[in-house]
Length: 220
Image (cartoon, rainbow, N blue to C red; front, side, top):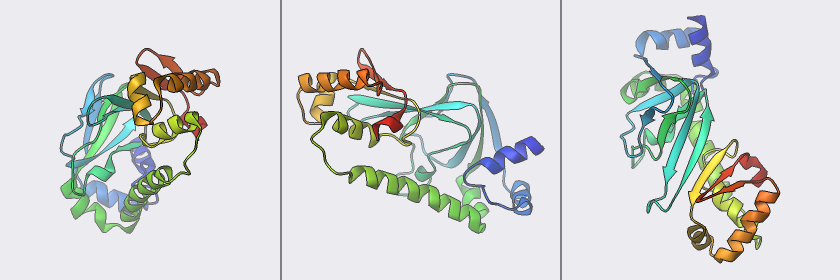
């Protein structure tokens, strides 16, 4: 019980809660614990987001595709992690990405009804929730308004950074050279030269139809 209690308190939305408040929450809120095998899909893009899903243990991946399916990004996240808290409210309450377990993964979910009726009673929970959403918006805004550059390598890096959730960890981008050239408004030859230069610098690894970015922070 102590181990589970400590793990739950590490989750971003519960950090700072007093033990007494958290005990009261556990008494009132129904927690649904689930164990996922490696490779198992946790939620699919387009599914209705009707609950908060917390990853307590393991590693998950998120798969996000462009609207025309011409390219897609895969990111990896270690527990503790909250799956798309921003999708619980707003004009579109459905998941943007597909999430799958990469290792044996333990999750706990709390329904939207319980979030609204019980968790939002606690100031620290509301503050944590607002901070998570605000940080995502601010980070995206900063990336979108980064000063334009003539460097093709920087433009490729900017394209990657504006499409990911966190500028840390390994990412995989599946895209054809022609498509990348089109979205960053350059020639295929120029993009090819830039990517090979970035590979020599250790910024990414090129494979057929995809690139692996071992550490996205190096693109900043």
